[in-house]
Image 1 (cartoon, rainbow, N blue to C red):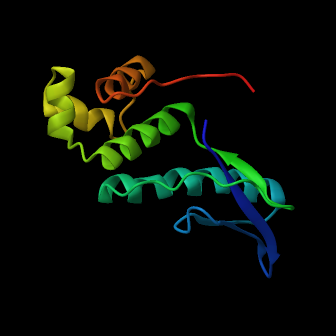
Image 2: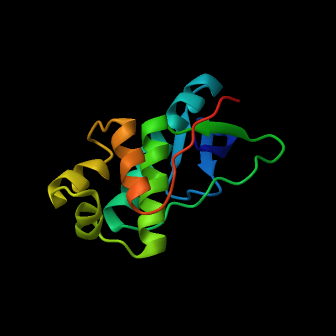
Length: 138
């Protein structure tokens, strides 16, 4: 899973959450626990901007002192990797569909964050563009 460093800093009404790597993700919580929970929601919501605009999602940097790591869900992390690779290789959804032997509508669902996609389907999409999805335990 992709884990992004977040700064959680006290402000006048609680705690402000910001992400260095994903500036669109900003949140707030009345308490530290609420701020951490809201951070995960803000990070996930910010991914929509990248997917809608077909922009590469920045890779997470190493956490600095005082930052907390906020994880994207595994399925979203896999979709981020697929989107970034498609952009890197200049592959359109239509081209990916051709390579996978499926319809463009199916590929649009694969790269839709709101659509539940089986991890095997994402792995197959990556394989069709010359990449292999690897999972590991930490």
